[in-house]
Image 1 (cartoon, chains in turn purple, brown):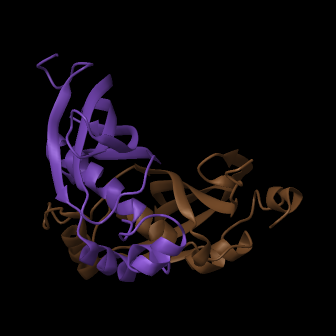
Image 2 (tube, rainbow over the protein chains, first blue to last red):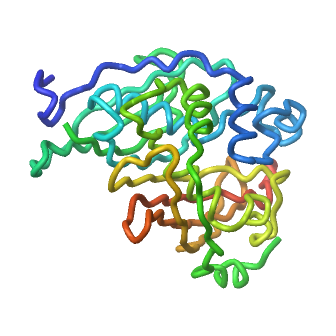
Image 3 (cartoon, rainbow over the protein chains, first blue to last red):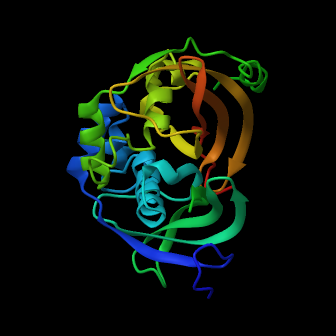
Length: 140
Length: 149
């Protein structure tokens, strides 16, 4: 694996999100004025056949990946973009980690613009489920 | 269920749009919810590109779902989402939001049965400067496939 973070193939350090908290989903539902009960009402989740725990808001999952990129690139001002596919629901109690690697580097006036493959993993990094995947762009 | 012809007619639908004041307290709470640190040079979390867009597209999510003959009780889900930032957003600033439905598609899968995929794009400006773009797709579950089939 390349040791230089502006090299294609460089893997940035795994970013541990931690355990998803159902109470945080309620705050976000209020902030987003999101009426979807799957984020707070277990009965609603059950009736839709989607399991027995509240389902995290998709944007929260994106935000975890953005946090990882901000931490790695050095600040919010270096964040340029993120495109993701939601592959599975994230439930209250899930333990998440963000991993990723550099796939392309473009030298621009104010630095190196790195395109990265990113994944949000539930469980252990080595054998967990990929619940969200995509591409991101950050300035290094 | 909405017909495919009616579904296709929604492409090009322009959202009413609106303005979004990025309240500092919302940035603080958002950072708290998603585990980000507060006070990164006075800049807002980049997800506000999404929050501002969805909040001020001029429709509530329930109204948006209704355009596609659905409600939040139907279990509408995210498909893909993209945020692209030209520059960081700042708490206390006001942004204008505009956009439209860009594509629709009826599909089938073993897991979801028949579902509609709806793509839409929202642009965020501060004065006349483009700050960011939020591109999203929602999945509207329509009919579960009988497992015995």
